[in-house]
Length: 613
Image (tube, rainbow, N blue to C red; front, side):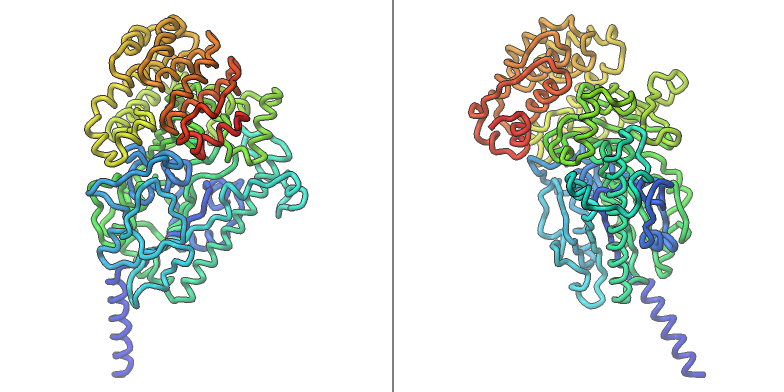
């Protein structure tokens, strides 16, 4: 009897100690996966038995978002629990890494402060200078097994088998590599060409996801072997959306919505308001992931972070499940520029295209290594696409509104539908308020931020909040009737502030030929403006509208560029005008470019595409 009591006391004591211990936390992160390709989330997806097994005793999040649709911008958001446009971490990949403010660190550093072992295996890809204090080990050899005996750990395991590069197969590879399902049985989304190549690409990608799922299972098995599964909270998620065309690199739900499953063992059920084996429609975003880990470890969310925890003690399920909104951002992806913001609330999604004349299908070297992209563009040039499929290669509206429940692939813009006028206005105003609150640093060109802001982007944003508000107000003239905007545009084109003129020119290009009354004024800017980038925006207006051939002027303006990202923005316009507006041809002498520009990898890609040596 005494023996049984002793055993019972030991068991109770061990359980009390285990519950008192801070949990181990593991992130298993797969590259380039949206939720849409997994049966756990979508009827057209593939079965993922290991992830599904994790979900049996875990929580499935039906609405998890990456905020940015590409690796470095998304991962910079993850590691700081902060929005990219506020920190200037949202360009892929950063031509100038930023320094974090003194009152903000990458979140694993806070875990180290309270005794956690932190390990990352192994991708980082941050647009931020990282201190040596963040990780105990960040390498291909990193493991939780190197911690001290009994030390709690936070471990990140990155899986890259599904990365975009895996879809850079050749036609010969297609013939030699059979997929596990017949290509014609795989769903092809309606804005894609319904071709054999797109069917094969879908099948091939799903096979990669199946392979990835096996790797997830291997990590879980290793935790089991180390007797750690019952005191380890496991997150499985994708590092941003999928990799088929018009997903990664674009603010579509295919590019933003990630699969998220979180396993919370019985010992730590007090740290989760969710029922094991349940699904939730609560919205969570990458800004929330880091602060959630901190909260699980008992660390209060730093005031300098943007996210809100959704796991941990003393959280209300009712409050969490009321969360129904997320914000997203897209700017430069490698050598391709644009500026897009989106706001999702419930089933509705509002998209703001700040440069609607920029074409989604504009050449991006890495994207177009995928045969499906190349075929899509070829079919467009041959006039073989329907209206929905062709939109990827046409100018965009300045704003769009989509009903994601009924139109998951964002093919029907409701912005001009009077029945949705109040929803449109409300979501537009909310996005504007969010951008002002950041403030959104993309109202300045990237090269200017590199020269003036990256040492302390938060302080720069605070100091220039009024200017950013002015620029945003000018940019939003594109949302009103041209007749209402005309007088203000005239005023801003003559402003002494360089970036007032910059945004007025962008709005003129957004209006296109409607703004031809400003041609004389814009030509004067093209020839005489002290800011090189304003000369480019003026020449861009003529290239887009076809009012005047400015190929020689754009070429000469390129030679005047002093910074790589300044030249890159000009080259973006040159490729845009050449490939889609076809109002000019270009003869560029690369020897006239500054050496620091010629040696830039992104610039090299543009010059190579333009057949310039």
